[in-house]
Figure 1 (spheres, rainbow, N blue to C red):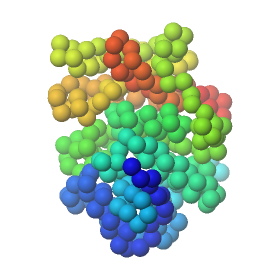
Figure 2: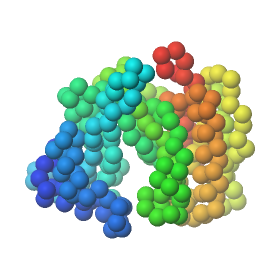
Figure 3: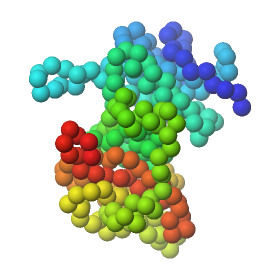
Figure 4: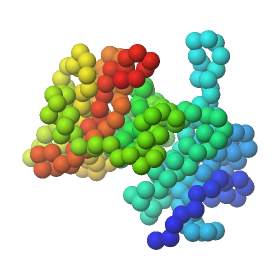
Length: 293
């Protein structure tokens, strides 16, 4: 395998190549992809379209789009951040660390522009995305957005999974993020958290077909961390049993609604083999003081 080159895209032709790559995942329906002229405009006005290529001058195999955003603050002024809108990695290039490399390149780009916060949303049922966003990158999920793209079944983006989203805040200059970028490898094993008494709000069990079924949703602890389980491979579960997948959607929606209403954030996720199978848990904790859990 040749090493990928990651660089900024500039020309209209490069943007049209990025559109073709989007269609490989999102399909050809109107509104399913960010059009080339919009990508070109974003790149010309403070945003970026990062592209990863297979070797010098080779095939475009991944893109990551970012654009400027403004967040209101108490003083009435606006605080800038970078909105990370879309990442697509060609199916043949997934699970090779390319998504992580793209995000780190985006971090360098944002810091070079004097921006220290990147924000995006993702489907809370996609364990691979949760792992990358919260554990590998050190971002935190700070807001739950119900029916973000409209109800499921209405067409468009909601058809790709859950219509709900978690908003992620990636503080690029935080101590944790800087340590991860420098190569620190935090503990990913849920065992220590479980042995320390951190409750699992919805520990799943296997049904007679070997599919994970969400357990009863327990009450939140008054303080300290809590674990919230999600299916290790939700897309595979959805293909096998759409009704069971909907049970997970509705339970996770109820759990996240309660967590954020109680002042929690999702500060990490952990995974490992428990009870003879792969498991993944969000780690939630209440926000205290200056917003740190």
